[in-house]
Image 1 (tube, rainbow, N blue to C red):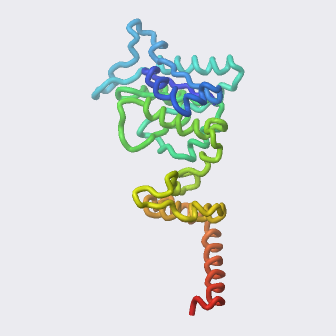
Image 2 (image 1 turned 90 degrees about the vertical axis):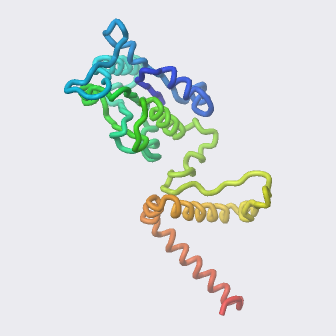
Image 3 (image 1 turned 135 degrees about the vertical axis):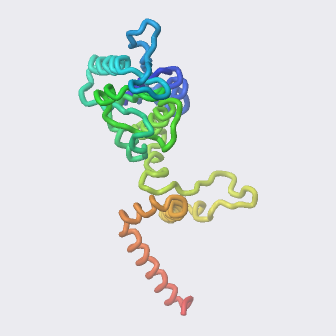
Length: 262
């Protein structure tokens, strides 16, 4: 997968992502990352890329021409490398967009190329946005000084969904938000720390019971912290509660037969 970031601060993108898991994936050629400096495509001899907005108002606005030419250059490069440049998704990171989520990360991870456009100042001339942008995405209801941090957040989340990026391929499928549920609690050595013990079921070696315990803990945590996600999971998994009720009914019958219940 290939990430192309149109930005005024390419060093910020490269230095922020060329480390840890993402950096290793880049080094192995599983994903590629390029940060394209929009200033390199301005026609202004002073490398200026902004101007005052028509109609007045505070701040400056990024001009259409350098953004458009930077986008064209990336498209041409993709074409020269033998990939389809006609249907590439161009993501403009903006507080006005749809809120980024895990399902979006999975969706974007299926693409061969993604272009992310980072705005600055008071934004970008609307005409170029209308011309090139396919997706308007936000990472939250707040305003940052530029689009570089949101772009890096998105690249990190998307790249983790690309096969081969994570050393444990199942971890990307079982973590928080992968199926509306928050991740279950996890424990490591030592078995006892500050008088707190690891739950016995995790030491049992019974994988079925461990999975059941983890699902129950995920449900509990999600219901408390993100009830909106819990309700979505319940809506899609009615069969789980039916089976759970039947299991509990069978358990109670066995207990009665043993004389443990009256």
